[in-house]
Image (cartoon, rainbow, N blue to C red):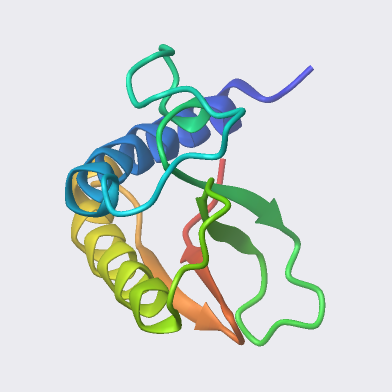
Length: 129
């Protein structure tokens, strides 16, 4: 059984990522073909399961990290195409900028920030229940 406060936090985080997912689809979704097993954008009720992009985060205890515990952000493109490194970096920068802008809107009562933890972006700060 999961703590309802954790579920509420993660639902808000998913809502934030769904906004960014839509923006990514609008901006880059037509530039690459979908993986043959992936449904078209809007074919499901969950943005994680269709379209070119899947943005999400998983909790990490932060052992060995200078930033400690937080939510490691993952940005996936579900395609068999080769994606240029410059495009990947442009997408990562766009996502990081939008996460920073949206965190206060989705979590107005928490002090959260996005940090770079080696090659990963991580949401850290007030994760208290």
